[in-house]
Length: 252
Ligand code: NAD
Image (cartoon, helix red, strand yellow):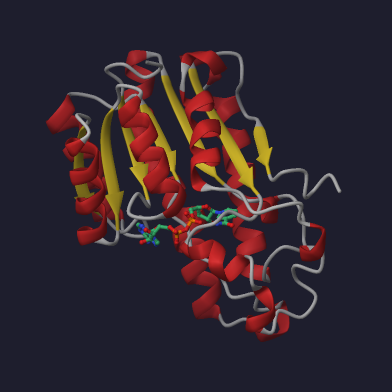
């Protein structure tokens, strides 16, 4: 098992990639702190993990709220003694709204979850990681964080920003044995992916213009496998990296 005894916080764990990551990490021996805005959903994920002999707790938290993030990390520490791994996965789409139509409210909501959320959780766990001189952070970005054609303006900017944050944290805290990496998934079969992969119903203009070049849609478990690698000691020399997992969509 690759994560034996490690304590892993996973945000957005009620659905899609977060759920797959929580389940895979538990299979690999981690104590999983599964968190989501959707309290019932994440509780069901934890029950599923426990039914298979894994160890997990559910913590309801909105990553956009500082008090929720404080409580999430404090609960992880009070329950399992420490935190070893942070997976910043919670994210929302912007329904392909272009810059001319964007409202302040949409921009701020998307950034609050996709960019400020990972900053809040990272800021809270870093002192724990610095004290123990180890820790791994994995941010679930997007190919929308690498290219301009995959989503609307707010989502694209929020995912570019989280990749910049990933590189800064990776560089800044490397001397403490802390690694911070990102995954840039292509289209993945999740609840959010349903909107991302069927953009025509959202009047998306030029966004996702390369959709027809998508070799295939991925499964959440395929992203969980990449997250497992980056969170585990197998990736001990990988820091500040962005791993694209998109079946070659952006290479096309
Ligand atoms: P999903 O909608 O299936 O799951 C996202 C989860 O995040 C949900 O359970 C939701 O309740 C939770 N969430 C939303 N806002 C939250 C908040 N403020 N606080 C806490 N939890 C919150 O979507 P998914 O596709 O599994 O998305 C996971 C990540 O992958 C996101 O960051 C998304 O941007 C990214 N991503 C998805 C795709 C795709 O095609 N599915 C592609 C690239 C990147």
